[in-house]
Image (tube, rainbow, N blue to C red):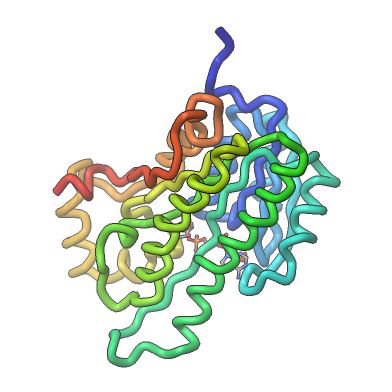
Length: 252
Ligand code: NAP
């Protein structure tokens, strides 16, 4: 039997693939055989270079995912460069921190737009194409520990990531019959730009580390196995889950 985790010939589109967790996911998918389009405001030259070095094709697509305006262009560019998208990884995300009593409407809207609204409409546009072509596919959303917990000083982030877990189930419910798997990965605490403020805060940093049974912050490469699993045939009967990759954080 052929390797059920093999992604040879598949095209993956990874939002926020130029850095942090998205880059870790993009490189894991490429190592498993996929060609990769990386979408971000900045160019994804580093990621594309590393994808090419693995013998796969790669393309950098620059777009601002604050609004749904670039959604069709992104899919058109990815398809023109690599072929139709088989695997969509909605990873781009932002966070804003302020006490709930002071939280601004701007910080609410900015986070909800990137983390939830555009995630949904990019998924919708991708699913429409997958359904029209009768190809099926895989949608992988990036959730968070704050899909399960409330967090502190991050109201819009918590709302968005709790929303991601719910939307992932809705997508599975509606699109499974078209051969589309929709699932999410919930990273624990990973050392990236997104968590720089926490890493720099000696009190919060010590609290967080003390609660992680694995005894360390996550590294972007730690997400590769879950991403390849959810992108591959190995997960064909897995639907609507949010898979924690958290060093045991939720087990405490
Ligand atoms: P990061 O290093 O800050 O990466 C964020 C990515 O999103 C970048 O590639 C960024 O690229 C892209 N992005 C942000 N705003 C965008 C926009 N308006 N348009 C297009 N792309 C945009 O943080 P990260 O930790 O890797 O975060 C990746 C995902 O994991 C996020 O959804 C985050 O919420 C989630 N997450 C992270 C952790 C953690 O511990 N680090 C834990 C749980 C979940 P540009 O700036 O070039 O646009």
